[in-house]
Length: 239
Image 1 (cartoon, rainbow, N blue to C red):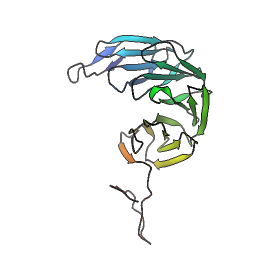
Image 2: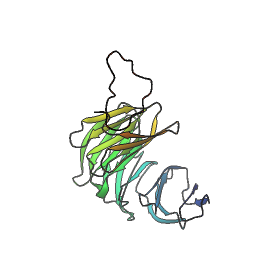
Image 3: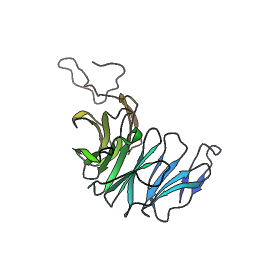
């Protein structure tokens, strides 16, 4: 079991949600904060109502450990992937998948799904990212990151895919798979989120540092013969 704090309880109160028979590997709240999804070594995914500690749905379609889960911004879609190399997509809270695909990603490390399930991205430790269109059932693009992918995120219009790749955040255009920007950080990135318009990207790294980055990134400008500083803080338009 695992402890969770919920807004339905007094501040700081701890509640245990019990149901998994083996270690839990991934957890995620839906965007509305009403539900929690967990997945783990027992090959199951569970949809919880933290306010009551009850399980609303059990998802038992995977044949091996489930390593990655993602929910859409409108809290209607759930994507899962595991060591069985399968990707499943569900309409929450329905426990039967409406889409499934053999992804060929051997050890998934991150997932993302767009509103209404229009696109699903799954990434692995090898740096491969599969971008899939569930509506057509086709793999739209196979992206190659420069290292292990720790996090993925789509903006609301799904025009870009953002990834935490090692200690960098990189974005690709989902239409033609071209790289639209990269920013280096000091430590490996563990979480990425992006605003609805894809103009602000938030990252968290292994040192616990939260950064908000204007996107697309803009190169800093220096006067001729001036050495760049070690660190720079920018505000406003640098163009």
